[in-house]
Length: 407
Image (cartoon, rainbow, N blue to C red; front, side, top):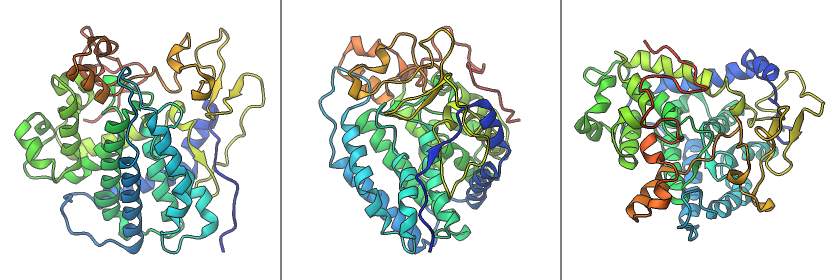
């Protein structure tokens, strides 16, 4: 019997703690798991026959249930805003309430582990207070699968169906949530990111294409090739999705993807994506300060500082070092306070970035001819974070993004 344990908590609050994490066994376990899943889909297509274990079938049924909850929770009338729809909080609360019950459907899962594992699952769908979603939430889904792997509910033999069936099903549910509730990009790098929300589909999608006889990275610029191969390859499906919700060309709204398309082989794209994930997700304090550690995914590094320079938001749980002059980096507010984060002078600092409306909100504003809303931030044209504009230089690396060699 697996003993019950305290709930997972946030442990990485300082650069020193992040530096320790990057050399830890836990970091290695996460990276090894990503690479194991990556290798399992080299040369694979979404339509490939795969053997679904009972655990994989149970997970797929859980994802179906999440989708049904979303479809039963319509957005509220929020036509005057391009930002996240408040109905997402209702959806989130429904997921949080039913999560323990859903986990009882997973065969052989020790009941004592459900409270811990459920938190990763709940946090996979977005942030309740900010109504946003980003690579940190995507990583929670990855680590939800990792916890099941560490508990031997999932095995290495499940790797291929986990990417081609489970993860791709998760992405499709997330697209529904993003389009229904207009989830804001969490801490978006704007045009300097891969897309507004996701990273892992591009990483594992590149693995699928390694060694392909005909398709090259530059093929993403050919609309006919994108349309033909989006049904079989995650990378092209993501390109097709981006093109469907944003105007202009990839070179304008997604220059990082445009730059990557100049790499000669998918092998180099894939290895570069792994390096980039280590640097921009696992290596970034704004992402990792929100990550939850527990008994299954442990943190055994230096303790958090015990001084007045750090404050914890009691409602959201973000820990922010206060700068000497005040506003930037201070605690976020939430819906209970009656003050929107975008009304706070000084902005949010590096934790969650400037609040950015979704591309879906931007597109809807244009369709309805709402010039006031569509001019707030031309995010559908700039790629998500306001990082570009008429004066933006294509091919440069945006603020806070370290260049990672793909070639």
